[in-house]
Every structure is written in C-alpha cells, then in structure tokens.
Image (tube, rainbow, N blue to C red; front, side, top):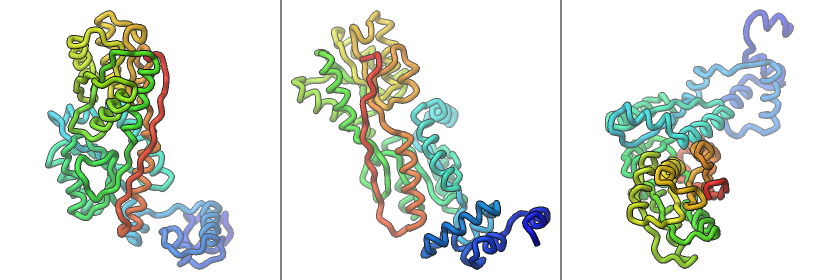
Length: 348
C-alpha cells in the first residue's frame, strides 16, 4: 500500500513508523514511550521517521504503558481571607504570571500539560493531593504564598512527586529552586549608597517568609559595609497597598529619608504613590529600588530601578527537576539557586 493510499485509509501507525525507520514495531514503541537503553542513533532514526510519517502518539495508549498521565499540577498554595480574594490575588499578581509562563513554555517542549490548581484551605490542599495520588497528574509544582504552608510536607508524607518555587520555611527533603536573595538585596544597597543616599530605609516582605528574611539581612549587611549601622524598616505584605501603608509609616517616623528599598516591585509601586501624595519627587528627593523586575516595574511612574530575578528560567528549572524526579524517583532532592542582577531605570 503506497503512502497516499495509507493516508486516505487512516492516520499513520507505529507499523508505518517502523517501516520507514527500518526497525521493529517494538523498537518504535520503546522510543515513543521513553524507555531507556535505546541506542541514541536509533532514537534519532525513529524520531525522523515519526516526523516523516506524521505519526501522532496516542496519549491514552502511552499512559497504559508508562503509568503516566502527561499532566502536571501547577499549584498556588497558601492562605487567603476567602477563595475569591485568594484567586483574585493570584491572577492579578505579575510574579505568578511569570512563573506560569516559564512552566508552560518548558512543559510544552516536553509534551506535558500543566493543570492550574489553587490550594488556599485545608480542604483545597487535600483535593490537590488526592488529585495527584489518584493518578490525574504525575506530580506537582508548588508555589507557596504562606510561610507555614503544610502542602509540601503532605506531598512528602504521601510519597508524591513535587518541587517547590522557593526554599521552604523549615528544612524538608524536597527539591526546590530559589534566588540568592541576600545577593540581590546587597545589589540594591550598593546602588543606593553609590547614588549618595544617606538616610535610607527599607520596606520588607512578611518577615515569616524566608525570602523576606534573606532580603532584609542582605540589605542590612551590605549597608553596614557602607558605614550604615542602622536601617529603619516597615514590614509590608508584598502587595501594592501594603507598600503604600509601609511608606506612610516610614515617612511619619523618618520624614527626611532619601532612599528606600522595597522587597518587591508591587510594594515599591505603592511606595511611589505615597511619596507622590506627600509631594516627594522620585528620584530627586527619594530614590526607590524594588525587587523582581516584574511588569509593575515598567508600569510605575517613574519606572523602577529593581533587582531582577529570572523567574521564567527558575520556573522552567522547577519543571525540569520535577520531570527528572518522575523519571527517576530514587534520586535525592535537588536545589538550584539563581543569581540576581540589577536593572537601573528612572526611580534611583
């Protein structure tokens, strides 16, 4: 039967791929199902034959062989006042949008599909765990918004595959990706000091979150090296309105400050609004540096000088670590730490 007639009869099969590649059907099956110990040259030949024939893998059939779904749960876990406010916060947060973009872009190249799940309550977390344990997803990528989030430990206890975005608040045998936050905050300190600012304060994130603690410590340590033994702080909540309120407190207690480091861009954006309302010019009167290099940084007026963390690359690495864990469950947990960079714009 020639190729034109075969195309008319039905879609390409494994037998068609085997015929074009000059190998057995069993060999083709091993390649498409990701079985190890297939000669790389044979793998290349089979992949070329797949492209030539236009063969499309039947995912349901593959799942019977591999015991995998080809789905990954992308979970935002934490605590919200209610489900509606929690979900609204997730979908309007530019940081999470970058995480999702990095995950989707990477998984697409692997033929794997992410399923977004929110876990703001104990019941919701139980649903996420049950979803994975019952075979609906092969594992979970967890982005926690609450320092004492129990979900990572629940996955460990259940023997389910998971990788975290950011170091957990307490030591756990689980893989994660994170940023060298201490280094990033030091970049902000060096920049403000280098701009000749002498009365500098900082707006922190929630101080029960490891990233907030690291950014505060890194900023204070670097400022002390520049000769500043005391840095006033106001605790924020990583949201814009939290940055506005924190800036109000700092101005009330330190009216002559001339530099501010905010531990994320949304709080820095809020700080800009408060400074504007008080008639303070940025950067002439007060220089402001943010953290993340999110969309908020370029939406602000003036645009924010900020510490960039490569969120999309970090999210892709998180997904890669999870797929490697699924492929080899016996491997030990891994951590990958990324380096920040300073992006200089108009605010400082």
